[in-house]
Length: 241
Image (tube, rainbow, N blue to C red):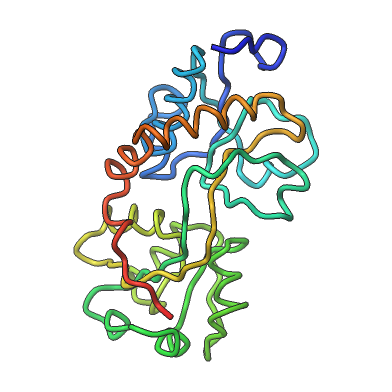
């Protein structure tokens, strides 16, 4: 393993930030013994760098403040964007997260096939997300989009049929379907070429080591194994155009 002395917050320990719960990515009990897709990735990185892993709570909205961070890296379904890349450093992508259309089973929205169909729906999205931006920039629906403070609130509105559909990252939608298989279904995805990355403080020397390990995990099939385990159903969703 590389010599990481002087790079880490604590010698021999990889301190990882996240804001739980975010199933199936980060599933409590947190911070002791969490499980999930991103937990597996982060702990595999720690193992391959020969480090003990320690999880800490860190609010996602504080990730992009200039303040010094208490972690070595943060893994929390964060989409790599040019704008965010100006304030933090990102790893190489570990996941491609397109936007998806999550609907209530048995409603008219379930038969959606084209972007024109989607425009007619009452759409919901979480504040500050790529899903909301996609609705406003690309879908341009005929009804005013409903904006929610949290994923859970938007999901509840969909379960209550207060909105027709929720535009949300495909893997997050897959997790919501797993929790409510009788009520919810993903009817399609929008190809947005979004990639998730691990977040480091600007100028982090740890990043190159993590990138090397991520590439090894992609090449040896470990990453695909984790995706199939935690995100079944994210590989064959029809595209809405």
